[in-house]
Length: 192
Image (cartoon, rainbow, N blue to C red; front, side):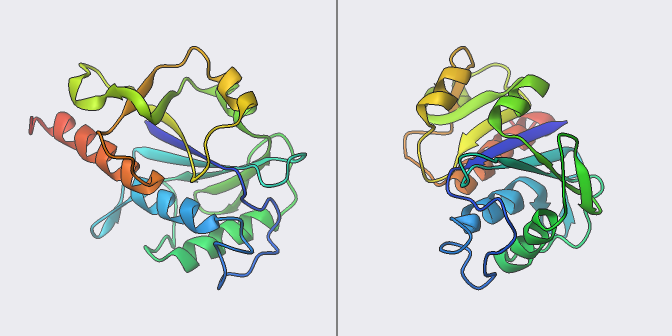
């Protein structure tokens, strides 16, 4: 299973944002919508071997994590607004420490990066990392940030994690996911 976890440092943890203003009222929810689409969608289909986690950290006291599972997600469209509607629906249901399904393949729970790192081993996707093209084996799980840098607390949690880069240019989070998935596809199918 391939996994991506994206930290949305400004992302709202409540569903009271406007779908017509995902960057503003959603706290850059537009970035997270594009990351979901980049990690899960392919032409005329969904990658069933990928999970995408959104860590919503806009409310410093109450982080939430939303999981999109490629093998069971339904109604995922490539436009940001409809993806935002799925996030909004997930945030509208009460949740605790365990994932609770809001729609097929979409679940939400309380907690953030610390809880996710306790569950899975991640590598960091960051422009300062080792080039993925010069790496023999790429891990299956990656953690990356939205348009903001990781906080000092997050960096402390990730201190010993390997860090990879997709190339010399600094890319948007969703672009980095696309490049990484292309590299993994090429390796998995023997195109290299």
